[in-house]
Length: 209
Image (cartoon, rainbow, N blue to C red; front, side, top):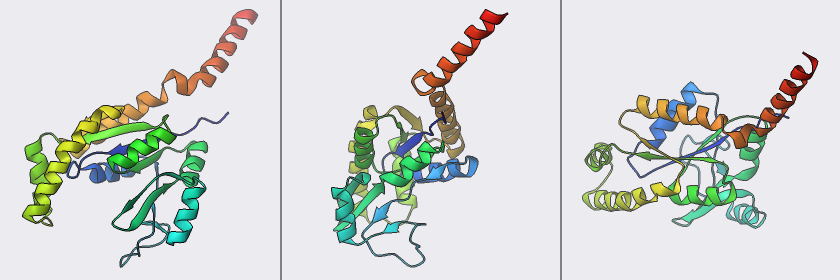
């Protein structure tokens, strides 16, 4: 029996650096990156099936009824969701799937696929988080305060995850997540079939020695 891949769900507060960490992980590993579906219009340069799967509202709602999403949400009048089929097919083929997603989406994925590996990215401090958000240069004083207050609330969700990784440097965060993945691949409940086969092989060896 072919060993299944892992679904690695990465999320955290805005400014924690989860996108940068996921990009670095993809460069170091042969992961399959889950692509979200959305009903919003493509922006300049975006390609269907590369940046997003662009769907009509009618098609998206039809997929909701068919339970075709691991999770979905409506944001500012547009739907966003994680297609279930592609992710589960990749996992079934033994590929590890990485999903960078917001906290609410991650908790919905956990309900539908609890065997996933849920990793929460934390900043080294709230002072550093504020610095990272400001350094983007895209926030007004009002939106900065909103994001910062939201981050305080979001950090409380860390207890819902399997692992917490402090992103002091991207390199350290990536190395920690790599270690988590190695440990998860060795969990008894994930490799029980291999253990049973190995045990039978050991018993047979002892019988014929």
